[in-house]
Figure (spheres, rainbow, N blue to C red):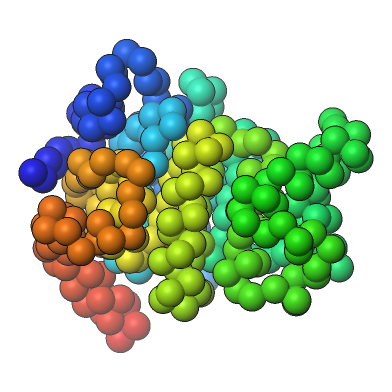
Length: 293
Ligand SMILES: Nc1ncnc2c1ncn2[C@@H]1O[C@H](COP(=O)(O)OP(=O)(O)OP(=O)(O)O)[C@@H](O)[C@H]1O
Ligand SMILES: [Mg+2]
């Protein structure tokens, strides 16, 4: 059965979906009427990217955001990471207002962006080295655990150029986990990978997410990927990004990749695709209108 609801009752919905009492899970991340304008210097005018987003992400929850290109997904994720100022509304993590980047959040980008002069081990310890709160040996031991978790043992002394794209993204994930963030922010992390590697990485991510017990917010254009990974899929409208609807994914975990062929999975896909289709059309026509001006 497919269950959809507006964002206002999303906390209750997520609690129910996971079979956990609402009271046992609190909102890790909370957005209230978050609105973000960019300033277009050339045109000397503001540009509305994100409009009054209300979103709760519960502790340990996996939430995916889908929406047309240019609708403001990355803008919102950057604001949660503390890289982008919000224009109005409130954005909190553990009840504290987000003002700047911090060790409680880690971002995984589309491109692995590893330091080419550092080995796999050196890349994974990088954040810990910067923080300087752990001895060299403790940092290396922690990094080795994570390298094992992402299935790369034996590659500790390899350099990024000696790894495939999928392996580099695993290092990126291990690097993000190394600083032990509360929240993992992932912006289309598998978009550059080939189809088979991507499917394999999705399965790996769920395994790592469950083992590390993290809260995750994941942006993707791939509806199947969103359904497979998430407890809830949030559909954005065309720009300015608003939450069109939230679909609770009532599929048992752990999930095998074969689940993507099951009828209830395909029903979710049809449901979300129908929701997003008109937004994609709206985005395409408004982008055409802008480019023709
Ligand atoms: N630094 C910026 N200055 C001005 N406008 C920007 C800036 N960054 C993004 N935008 C605009 O804000 C809107 C939202 O961009 P954003 O990158 O958040 O979209 P997105 O949903 O992540 O798209 P995609 O799926 O293509 O990655 C777009 O119209 C984009 O042109
Ligand atoms: Mg983006």
